[in-house]
Structures are given as structure tokens and as C-alpha cells.
Amino acid sequence: MSVLEKLKPQFHPAFPRLASGKYVHFFLVRHSQSFPVFQTDGVLNTARTQAGLDSEDEKSGQSISRLVMFKRKQVTPERLAGRELLRSLGLTSAVEGEGGFCEYNSQKACKKCPDCILYGFGIGDKGSERSKVYSDSAFSLSPYETSHRSFTFNAPSENGTMSEKGEMRSAINNLDHVLPEVTFPSVETLRDPTFEGFIYVLGNLLRTRRYGGQESRTGTMTNHIVGIAFCDGEIFSNLYFTQAIYDVLQAKGETRVPIGNLQREAAMVAENCLKQEPVRSTIIVEAELGGLLEEVIGVYQDEANLRAIMTTLYQQTQTYSEAYGALFPEKKKEEKKKAKQGSSS
Amino acid sequence: MILYLCHLTLHDNVFFASREMGTLYETEKYLHNWALSYALFESTYIPRPYRLEGAIAQRPGYLEPDNEQNLLHLNQQGIYVFPAQPLQWSYQVITFNVSQAFYHQKSRQSGGEGGDLNYPISYGRAKELAVGSKYRTYTIAPAKTPIPRWIRLGKWAAKIRVETTLIPESGIQQASGEYISEHPLNPIDLPQATQLLLYNRIVMPPASLVSQAKLSGDYWEISKPDEWTELPGWSGLKDLPQTICLPRGVAYGANNLVATP
Image 1 (spheres, rainbow over the protein chains, first blue to last red):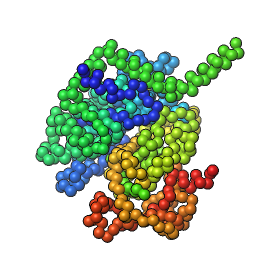
Image 2: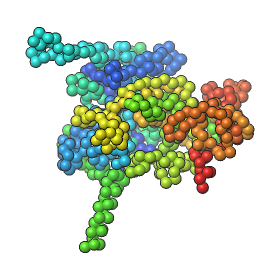
Image 3: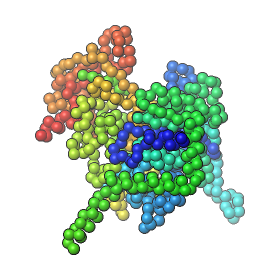
């Protein structure tokens, strides 16, 4: 039996109205491949944190600055990647008036597509959907000082020079960038999913390749999934996960390790930390995880299969929306109208 | 009475719009007990619907029985969470924006020209409580109530670590009369017989809190025994203050519910 088949009973058959205790936690190591920029106020986002978990230990207890990848800088590109997929399959549309029209972050959210239902929306008194995907700000494993560099960038004129007709152009500036191979250990949580919803969110994690500002030029990152846990509650934070990995690496006397080794260490740390949490859990790591990811990647490579799964997901979110959501009062009104017409004619 | 000492550590920035000044949104350093109650017991004791529609999406009904997500569920269970006192805190000011999928859409003030939106403009600066801030609070709950180790709090659903320790009953005494509570309190949740004599007001929505209050009424006096380090059950309570007084008979909306039949 395939890993996915085996996991199916863990999911809801339909999206529930009330939140329940079903949590899927994805353990990932976000790894920069080029020079991403995570800033909100002209400088890279940083935070002062304890290096590891043990405040008594000299190395672990020291306070260091870490780069921060705010939660919305993680979820937004993932949502957009998912929306792109839904559009490419013709399930939603960006053109107003067409069936399945849905506009991101606006009053014109369709309130029924997988993106609206899984990641949530809020449109004033027209209703809101709480997100089923939770993230947490991610902190770099290595300190800020060794993880960034300032670069000057310019905008040359058409002939490739900085001067035009004898006048210097002023389009020159410099900006701090995150270096390649900086890692951000993360836990992303999905609550109350259906099987198809799980495939969708996991796919978004695997398919999103660019994060942060300037994303069309730089900002490539890879999400290495090191474990998936099915739990009945919330578990440790990204900061805790990062600090625990820091301690393990310190104990071994290695601070910069290749990503392959880091993935193995992170998987072990996730497994050990999970054992200390007061929740029931099943964790998928190593060979089983490899099998699962292979199957999910297989789904995304096979158009017929992908289309079938995403169409089912769309039907689930639409049914949910009709039963509990924004479409519910409209439908009722229509029925009333029909009943009225029926009685008057 | 079963009383727990709860220690909270922020693992992400916590943001609430306690005060709004133009485009600056500031978070109060105290954590409101109603917010903590939802964070700790939502989906175990308080139903948490995913979809909110119409008026209820706009106006919270903390103490209204008609509202599905009210705090009265916790009164029935005998659970009460006090507001949290900051022990160590810092702030971080962060600019946020809500960019549109079409790259850029000019943000509009609510109610402004062409503004039929009733949510605020789509950018601003948030003064958030920073990672690493530490809080202390107390929770009354029956035995075996599951108190989670991790909760999510605030507008951005920030992760917070909760460390809970039971306070041995031998350290809790009943008393009546005038007393000073060093711990912040929510005046709406005080029993009607308790009177607030003197206090500092902590102005924050949805209901302002009071701190360093002098009250009169029934209370619990919690004190550490002199040789507490050697007594069983006390070893984990290093951070408990030597003496602390908390009002007796607190419940969500206790002051209001008696007044309205």
C-alpha cells in the first residue's frame, strides 16, 4: 500500500465547520539559494534571541542576532503559487465575469476556492474565513553578522552605462541581502485538512521557489521537508526548533554543515522535540517520508491525476462554502425567491 | 481551589491594536485575560467556527450567550484566566502592507473617497511585543483540565510557550477585607461584592484592566512557605512572588451578569 493510501484515514472526509484537534505539522528547512531580501523598514529584519535552549551553557546561552523571515513573507508566496496552479487548471480565473473569478486580498475574493478556504480571507462585514494554515516567523540558524552582505545595485541606461548624454544617472543604491545557504528551520501547521487539502498545501511548500522582496531577480529558496507529524495539538515554535538544532550542531563542534547533513540533524531534532510535547503524535521521517514525497511529486507531474485531485478539492471547498459560508445566505434567498415565484404563478 | 502559575514566553512578535494613532498601531504591554482565555481554551471548551458571517464577523460578543464563541462556556467549566503581567518585555516597530496581486493598488482610507471598505488602510506601522518577552499569569481550573503547552495569540497568531505549575493548596489561604493585588485584574470579571478602592487603569480594548489595585472583598492569599525550597510540590515555583492576593469569586462578566437578569 502506498504511503498516501495509508495516511488517508488521518484526514477529514469534508472540511468541518468547527475547528477540531487535527493538526498536521510540516517540519522544513528553508534554505537560501541566492540572495533573498527580507526587510520591512529599509534594513533586513533581525531579532535578538538566545542562541540555543540551555541558558546555563556558555555557547547556547549567549544572545545572538538572527535574521527573521516574518510569517507573512513565508505564506504569501506559497499562497500565490497555489493560486497560480488553480488558475492554470482552469478552476479559478483572474478575469472578472468569468466562472471561478477570485481576486487575492480584495473584496472580490470568491470565498469558495481552495485558497480562500484553506488560507482564509477577511472582507469586512461580508464575512471572513479563518486560516487553516498557520506559520510562525522563522529565524536563521546562523547569526545575522555572518549571514548577510550589502550590495550596491544600479539601473544603467539603455546603452549600459551610468551616464547619459554626459549626465550621471542617480539610479544607484545599496541594499542588505541574505547570503546563499542560510537556513531557516520552520514548522508550518495545517489544521483540519482533507486529504486533497493536504496535497495542495504540501505542493505549495514544494513548488514555491522565491521568497522576499526583489523576487523576480533574486530570492530563490528551497524548502527541504524533513518530517511531517500528525498531532492533536500545537507543538514547538520555529525559534525552539532552531535553537534545538543549534545546540546539536554546537555539541558536535560544527557550525556550518552541508544541507544534506543538516536535513538529517533537523529530522532527528524534530523527532526528539516532538517526544517531549504533551500531544499524541505520529511522525513520518526518513524512508517513509521519502516515499510520501515521491508520491506527492508524482501527483504534481501527472496532469490527469493532479486535475482530478484539485477538482475534488474545489468541490469540497465549494460544498463547505455552500453549507456554512458566504454562499449560504445567497442560496437561501434564491430558494425563497423561487418559492415565492412558484406560489404567485 | 486549584490554581496554576503560568509562565508565558513569546516565540514570535505579538500584536494587538490596543491604540491606533493614524498609521501607528501600538500594542499594550499587558496581555488581556479574555484574549488569553480564547488562546488557551478555544476549540477545547469554546467552539471555534472557521467561517464568520454578517454582524458577528464585525462585533465580538465575549459575554453574550447568543454568540457561539462566548467566554461563558469557561464559567460553566469553572475555568478562569487572569490577565498577564509583563516581567520582561521589549518592542519592535514593523511596517506592514497588504499588496495586491496586481502588484500595486493604491490604499484607501476607510470611509474616505471611494472607500466603501470598513477595514483600515492597507499599510501601517505596528508596534509589536518582541520575541523573548516574558509574562506571568494565574489560571483557575478544575483538576485534569488540559492546559496546552503552546498557544497562538494576537492578530498574527504568534506562538507562545506556556509553562504551567500547580500551586500547592497548602500555600493558599482564604481571607476577607481590604487587600492590595499586585497582579493586573479585569474589573468586569470581579464579583459584585468586591469593591475597587484605588487602582491604576490600563486602557485597552475590549475592556480596560486595572493594576496595583486596592480592593475590598473576599480574596485568596497565596504565600510561599519559608522553607519552600525543601517542600514537595514547591520546587518548580521559583518565580512565584513571596505573597500575592487574588480576588475570590472571579468569573467572566461576573460583575455584569448579576446586574442584568
